[in-house]
Amino acid sequence: MQGIGPPLVTPFDEHGDVDYDRLTDLVGRLEREGVDFLVPCGSTSEAPLLTPEERTRVIETTAEVASVPVLAGTGAPGLRQTRAWTEAAAEAGAVGALVVTPFYYNHSQDDLAGYYRDLADGASIPIYLYSVPVFAKTRLDPETAGSLAEHPNIVGMKDSAGDLGAFVRTLDRVEESFDLLVGDASVLAQALDAGASGGIAALANLYPDRLSALVETHSDDPEFARERNRSLVSINRAVTTEHGIPGLKYAMRQRGFPAGYARRPHTEPSESARADITDRMEQLP
Image 1 (tube, rainbow, N blue to C red):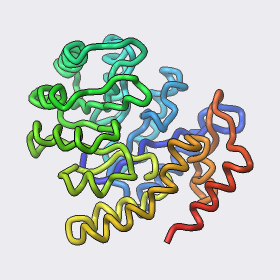
Image 2 (image 1 turned 180 degrees about the horizontal axis):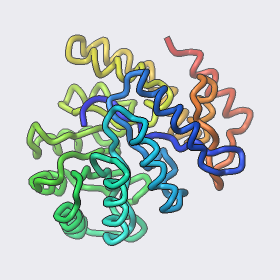
Image 3 (image 1 turned 30 degrees about the vertical axis):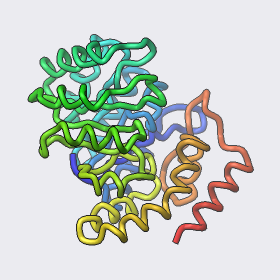
C-alpha cells in the first residue's frame, strides 16, 4: 500500500446500528477526495465494538463499492480468531490484512514474531503488521519487525508507536519493497522524509484531500509538505488524543461526511468539545 489510507470510521445510526448506506456513501466521498486505499475495521473504525458478523459485512460493503484497494483489520487477541477473521476478510474482498499485535496479555517479542509467522504461513492474503502500543499495551520492536519483513507473506506495517527514531530504525531493517506506513498524521511529512510509503491516519477521514495532496507534493516540495503538515497538528490532536472517535465523527459531520455516530460506551462530545473542534477547524489555512 502506498499513499494515504483512512482507517475508515464505521457509521452507526442514533440507535447504535451499523448504517451500511452511510458507509457506502462515505467510501465514495473519500475516494473522490483522493485516498489511495481504505482500511475498514481498524482502531478508528471501532472494530472492537463490532460483532464478527458486522466486521465481515463492513469489509464486504467497503470492498463491493471501492475502486481502491481494501486493507482490512483482522487482529484479535488469539491466533485462531485472527486466522478466521483474516480468511473472512479475504472472502469479503480485502486484498490485505492489517493485524494488530495481540492485546490484553503481555507477550514477548519472540511470542509476537512466532504469532505473525504462523499467521502469515497460512494466510491467503498478504499480512501487514500493526503496532499501536497506546491501545494494545505492547509494541513491535524494530528488530522484530525487520525479522518478520523477511517472510514472503508479510509485506508491510502500520507503525502507530509515535516514535520517529524507532520508525527510522525499522526502515533501516526492511527492504524498499516493504510498505512501512505511519499511523499519526501529525508526523506524516517527517515520516515521508525518512522514507515512509505513506500513512494510515484517522485524520484522512476528515481531510482526505489535504493529506493526499501532502503526500503527492512531498517528493517535489518537501518543505511545503512539512508546512502543510504543521498546520494540521492541532486539529489532528483534537480528533484523536483529545476528543477521540466521537470528536472525529462530529467534525466529519460538520464537513458533510456521512460519518454517523459512535457506538456506546462512546458518547457524543460535550458542548465545549464541539466548540473546541469547530474553532480548530476554522483556524486551518
